[in-house]
Image (cartoon, rainbow, N blue to C red; front, side, top):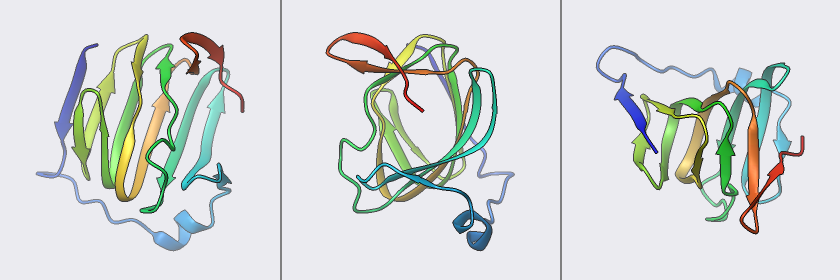
Length: 130
């Protein structure tokens, strides 16, 4: 799996409006992971993931990115099989990439899926349930 990563910390200051973030329509998965859908067009989605510091280590399921994934870590840290990424890191994963992210501390990540996501269960790709 090819990964392109670049820290934007040298020229980008992330100043979150916590009040606005808190007012988003969050979907709580019950394991410390929450998602707010910001935009959706067909299979293309722009979402925010919020991961609480006390989230279960397996809060994210192993999944495949049909058309790749682009994300920006707004707060905290995300790690997966490709490395660890922190606030200000911009990451691009290739189409058909598979990973299992995990967060460290309170984390907020802006994610773009150009062509959707498939959860990997029992080594068989299953459609993502919304």
